[in-house]
Amino acid sequence: MAGKLHVEVVTAERLVYSVDDADMVIAPGAEGTLGILPRHAPLISLLGMGEMRVKRGREEDVLTIFGGFLEVANNVVRVLADASERAEEIELARAEEARQRALARLRERRADIDRQRAEMALRRSTIRIAVARKRRARPGAGGPPLPEAEG
Amino acid sequence: MPQAVTPREIRRRIRSIKNTAQITRAMEMVAASRMRRAQQAVLAARPYADRIRALLGDLAAMTSPQEEVRAFPLLQRRPIKRVQVILVTADRGLAGPLNANVIRRAVDFISHERSEPIENIDIVAVGRKGRDFLVRHGWPMVAEFTRISDRPSLEAIRPIAELATQDFINGRIDAVFVIYTHFINTLRQEPRVLQLLPIEPPEGTGAISDYIFEPDPVTVLEALLPRFIEMQLYRVMLEAAASEHSARMVAMRNATQNALDLVAELTLTYNKARQAQITREVSEIAAGANALGALQ
Image 1 (spheres, each protein chain N blue to C red):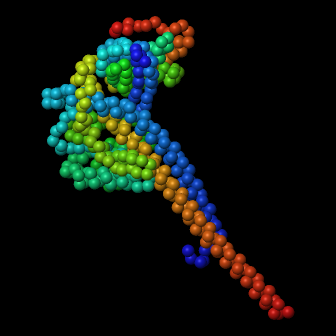
Image 2: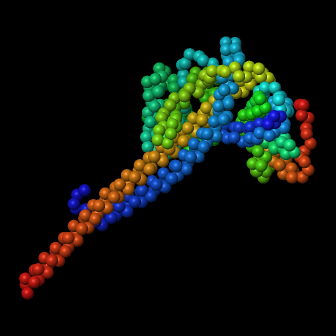
Image 3: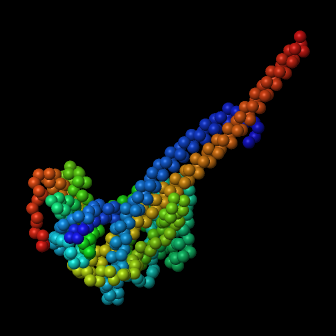
């Protein structure tokens, strides 16, 4: 199948996601959003935290990515993530809870380490919630509009 | 078996051994299912591990060795004055010779293979059996981690990796070794020593020389190194878990078999004793009857 991307997301613990009919991948690069189309030049990039989106025809899969690497070569996009989950796997209620906890902790005045940790927790849960909501919203129109793909 | 044992006593022993067999069989079954899960976890970890390792080799080959070494403290080889040994054992026993073997390997390694005096060795115990051994023998232990060996997660091993990495970077220690049980197959596991730090990158293949790097190869390699350590430790823990459950399964299977053999043997003894008793009673009755007949 020429012109399609094979996309694979693995963590140290498991294979999170794998498809071989993707048209485009949008990933949270460490230095800005990465947009990857078929026949992309070989690339290795650091990843930040955020959502990764995989377009397949009219479908779109959304995943969380919490740091790691992305590698592109020969129409294969491989993500080695520190942690990742598919939108369907996220428990929205738990993510909301985590977010509230982090916010509450940030309102208290505590030591720097606690603060840092709470900020990280807040970022993570915010990403989770955003990704989980995308899955809920999808069975409406043909998915959200394409973002700035050229990055 | 002495003759004095009564059939009733034998029957009681049979019952008690059967109970034991039931317990060991249940433990065997639990260990078998955990072993399957642990083996699956080893397989699931492989794609990430293989790719990280290959990337490390290729990236290390790309960056010129001498001048970059300073940028990568985790690759730094220096004269070894002080080492850290991470001893990975199970939390629980009843796993055959598993824990004893890995502990013996560690003792060998520390007291014979390393030239550093014992005061210059920091031992980190992962798993309760190793911890107990160190405490009992008064060996120096700088940290202990328990309740993770059974079913390791990446989250659980991160603090161990962090401790080793920090001590290595700030110069407290000059090398880190992990001693764990390597899983070969269900019947065979062997203790092994793995050098965790400094990292020895595998051979590069030059496969990524024409890649674009975001932001650049040095930064990517720098980010890769700590992940490589975590991955190695995680793999070690998975191997150890698979070994533990396999060893326990085999040990419990043997225990069950031994118990059943014993039951068979005791049943034979019981029947003999019972027969002897009946014979004796019959002959007593006969003797009694004869005596009565003689009186009349």
